[in-house]
Image (cartoon, rainbow, N blue to C red; front, side, top):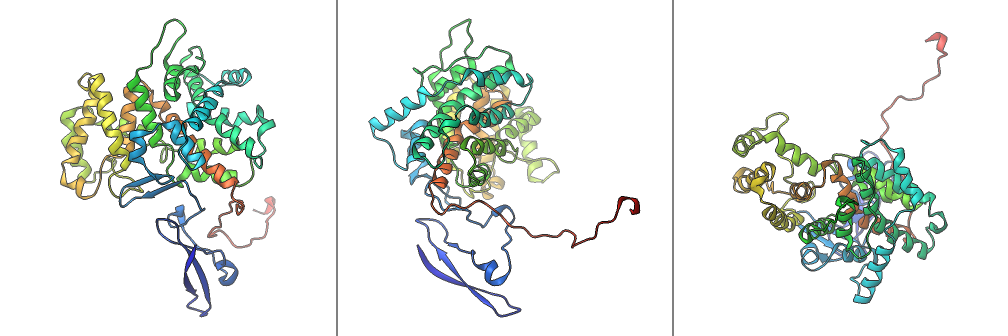
Length: 431
């Protein structure tokens, strides 16, 4: 609701433009700049969109200073304690927690959509054995548009629902097939009797020649990670899904664009960087020296997995996953794995060092997620794929919200042009 007015004045001409401000339910007000170019002849300039609200949304809210993350108004701490990833997916999509009957219907629909078309499975044979899994996942998701073109009318509410269920159901199967292809192992079909993350782990690690039972703690840890990563406001990949979707493209193309954006190391690769850092440290006794080098700001020495661009306090997701990380490592025996022992020592020393505490450089969710994935046997090449599996629920929710918005417009950012002014063409023979 509009409740404030601002004046933008050109100091050279004295011309003023009245700007209307809008208030959300929580968070900073936003100022509408829609009329600035028309009335003042200028664009706003905000590289990285750090101070720009690109849309109106009802899905996720972050207060970085207070360390708050809300999904549809529910604190992430409460959801982590009482809910599941699949229930959170329903919440993000529909805006409300489901009744028992609604959840059973939703979960049943997801379990019945997990299989991939056999022709789609054959496409994996076209990828080299060492192709990056994110390349395969992005390509297969985009290819789904060629198999389900009869239910992709983005203006049909039933088609949108079918898409939402279908992509959330199939993305673990797509990821598992990419993993099996890289190993040269037979593809393992999904099982409708297993819950969401247990089914994923079974498709990853089962083989036809022997039985495989999913460890309940492993499934719980994966479910928790998926829940914590399900959505995070207008991050780069979510904004990419919205921008691509604003063109009216089919929803699989929009989600594939999100997968590709997430592939960037500045977005989805942070937990992999944590393990690379631990490998460089090498041994527990090297931790104090490494932290001293960080404090001395030596070139090329960075403390990965600590601090966050949004959270200026403790990452609320990190507090939750830290306890699960210790459970997983405790069951495995961290003393048997030097990397895990090293991570725990780094965490211990950094959390007691005034240099890091005073700068609010607390461990973030990436510090713990990479350690857990590694402990569960997920290879490093699949870390970003795991992120994509989790974030699919958020991408779908934002795409659905945008498509249903009658005020939706195609995204079209402007620019500050600093290239050449008009030049006349010179024939090649005269250059």
